[in-house]
Amino acid sequence: MINILRRVNSSIASNGKKRTKNEQHAYLWSMGSPVDDYERSFNQYKCQNYLLGKSLIILVRNIASFVILVFLWLRHFIGREYSFESLKTGNKSVFLYESTNIDILPCSLSHNVDIVGLNGPLFFDEKCRDIIKNLWKRYPFSYFFILKNAIKIGRYGYVKLHYAPDRIISSCEYSFTSSVLTCYCEESGIQHINVMHGEKLFNIRDAFCRFSTFYVWDEHYISLFNKLRASESVFIVEQPPAACLENNRTECKKRDYTFYLAVETETTLRRLQEVTRVLEEQGKTFLIRPHPRYTDMAMLKSYFSCAAIEMPQSVGIKESLQETRHAVARFSTVLYQAYNSGVVAVIDDVTDPLRYEALKEEEYIMLQKTDFRLSQIIVQ
Image 1 (cartoon, one colour):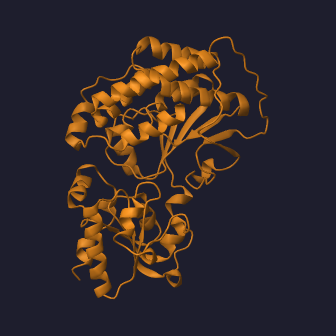
Image 2 (image 1 turned 30 degrees about the horizontal axis):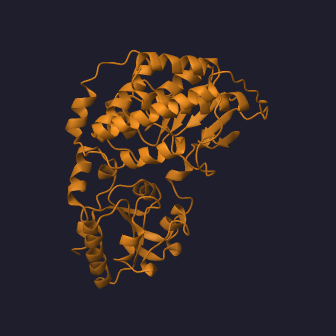
Image 3 (image 1 turned 180 degrees about the vertical axis):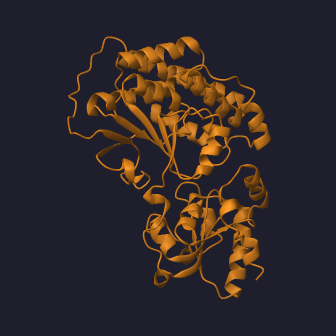
């Protein structure tokens, strides 16, 4: 039931209402200063509901969460004891992450780390239970808020018991559970460390989050998170291996341009098709790389042949960047990676001009780091 709700919530969140930066800023500052981590998390939850803007869906999600919450309570809180043997492995850090690839970890954090999946057994020690009870008392009808915090705290409770870590490392600034989890960790004598793993804009989805320590890629992001009222975290600037290629040799280049896609529409793909036609007339070579989760492959293949598509499942992102002279995207972490690696980063201002203009408001870092725009290239 929890997995079903998680998938439904992800689908709902990806189709939220578009809010301008001014609208988000006004809503963000309409809230008072949070008195503790509970309120920080709840403020972040309210910001995300504001972005969703669908009161009926929020209500239905809340009702479904109540049912699951009751089930969770009966199963884990009443008349049941747990006994897990702690793993005394000497690993003092646990990285809660879906992948086994730890190249998003800064080098200073990448040693002596156990990687543990986000989904797994739950365990509620006394501190877990106290936090959940306090949240329920303070926000008695916000069932989705309580449920998600309960699930995440239960996962952290299991990790705490099973691994006995000094540090729990996460990558979850977008989760409204982050501040409550930091509270739980710190009260348990554990550092809660967050690592940035992808590009960030001004988006109140990330507002109010707090960690013991938060690793970011650039000073720009400290300023951005301060504007999102996440200033209670201790920020450290350190780029992980994922932010830069190991090798970027000229002899490795196989094409002139690689287009890195995200969520695409018929209109953006039609415009991209016209862009590639112009490049072909200029004698340039290219590939189209879909996003592994967001790009509609059936739609993409109606505009481009399979030979023109680079599948993420077959070619890693670093290999892809090593083989191209120019990386082109509207908004993507890959542009930052390209810039750091000596690959020419080109911002796509053609396929969705309105989105490009919005990036100026949202403080997109690459607008300051690269002067290359797709519109300039196709008129050469």
